[in-house]
Image 1 (tube, helix red, strand yellow):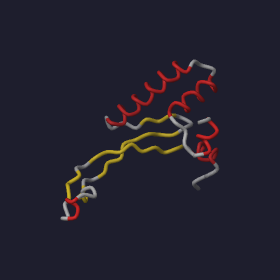
Image 2 (cartoon, rainbow, N blue to C red):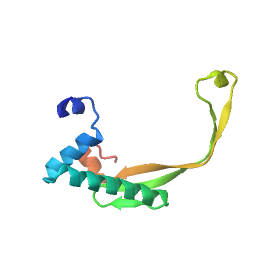
Image 3 (cartoon, rainbow, N blue to C red):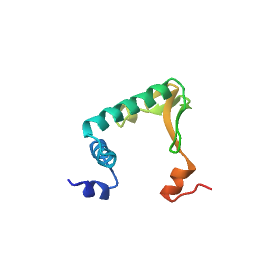
Image 4 (cartoon, rainbow, N blue to C red):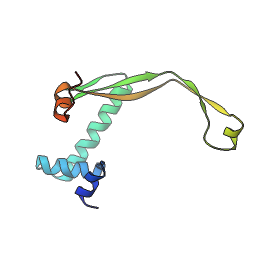
Amino acid sequence: MTATAQLDQGRVSKREFIQRAARRGGMPVKVVQQAYDAIIDEVIDLVQSGNRVTLTGFGKFYPQEHKGHVAQTNFTQERQRGATKEVPDYKVLKFSATREVNKRLGSTGD
């Protein structure tokens, strides 16, 4: 599958993203791969610890708390019996882009 075909589907794989970033930055793919892995791991570790990570001119990553709730189990015989399970409180990773980024995408949010 070509890069154009992947983009036409509206999705870019991690591999394609890294290759494109390497071309744009004139760097070896291996270096960009290492930087990508380090950046993603660092953002996740910081947010997991309750921090907000602000990348000036891009946006911020932050944790959002969700309260636990009761949920139906998967579509199995158990569900037919009305089985439920308790989902404990949990965090999710959220991202908020800067106005500048949103403007580049064509949505001002105003």
